[in-house]
Image (cartoon, rainbow over all chains, first blue to last red; front, side):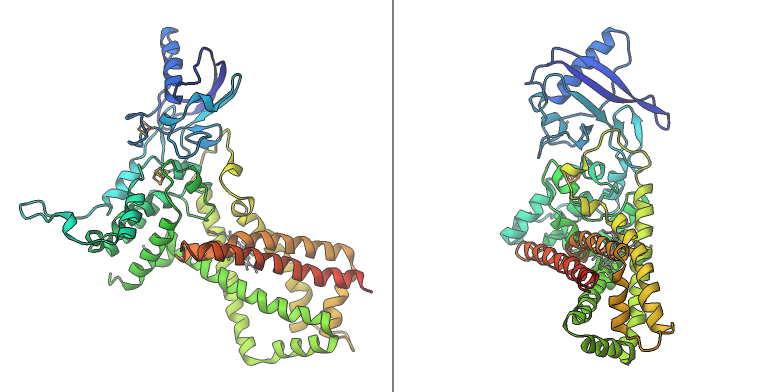
Length: 250
Length: 213
Ligand code: HEM
Ligand code: SF4
Ligand code: FES
């Protein structure tokens, strides 16, 4: 396949960047999108040019490291996959492909296509955990009966890999799908109920501090999410937040 | 951070004021449809609305509802723009969301313009203005539609309102935390029927009096 790539190049944080054009040839339709970028980078390095920086780790759709806004969509035109699982057969010979970093104030560009998603980590640190005493008498999680439906919903929410495609796709750069998945995976389980009230208040407060926008229920996040995280979670987070906001004593 | 200044708190305000305005529109359309029945009936209803103390009190609640809805809507829009300082060179929002869902501020602001025109020509005249001798509310309401441009502005606004409501109706439930595998599909359908009824109902009245006489 012969392609024309238009890639965002930016030397460092806060530097001015621009879209650069790179023609590329000899791409197999069986390559993954990241392998295609590897080919480009090999070429750039042999030509003595600076390779394109992009995030990746597992390359099998489980770590959430890869990102990329490809031809106007987060993780590209395919559904239910991350960029590392996207294959070049989804494109046609001769295509022009735009490749851009996630765009959000809360996700500043570090270099080229790499953005800083530390905001997600800080939201998790604000409450996305259960405090478990690990010294000695830990209970087996299975000793607490949990309705199958709740367990399934919690598991579905827990499949969020924190990639940030929801923020990137949202016209408001809202992080509500991510935060709601993280609130839900714990709020649905008895172990998570203990800190549920404090958790939702603190995580939403941190989300707002990071400068993410506000959900207007366009549903773009759900469509582009590689893990199919449902908007149901946002409604659940709002319920949890209303409950906590009304009942909290502080 | 206060509940009502948080992101979700503001959504709750949008949702509750939106649902309140949705209810108000049903009453408004109901009264207006009486113009199609008879002039007397409409004048009676209009007189009742203008004199009943409960309705008078509700006027202030309604005004507050509009002010909150519009101010929060504009604040949210500004914050949402700030959340993305740099736009994409290539973006395909139509692949993942509907036009009406992405255009709430546009349809909202155009409805606001319409609202100003509407209040100036009807509400202001009925409440504070001097009605010309022998002219009833009915004459005022139906008379303005003799102007074709006026009718066009009205009908266009009702269509925009329809789009605002088509997304707004179900969105208000979702924002308030009401999402259920069984009921949400039903809420979406009711929202679509409701928006169609509002857009068609109000337009029908304007068009009827524009072309009837
Ligand atoms: C009779 C008139 C109106 C009705 C019935 C109405 C109804 C609604 C409803 C039900 C929602 C959804 C709320 C939610 O998502 O929780 C909404 C959202 C919105 N409305 Fe209105 N609205 C009206 C007028 C206006 C006006 C005049 C503006 C002017 C700025 C406006 C701006 C907005 C905006 C920006 C949103 C999206 C906010 C968000 O989802 O975060 N609306 N409206
Ligand atoms: S909700 Fe989906 S799109 Fe958002 S971070 Fe989680 S996996 Fe990625
Ligand atoms: S590299 Fe791990 S999900 Fe794509």
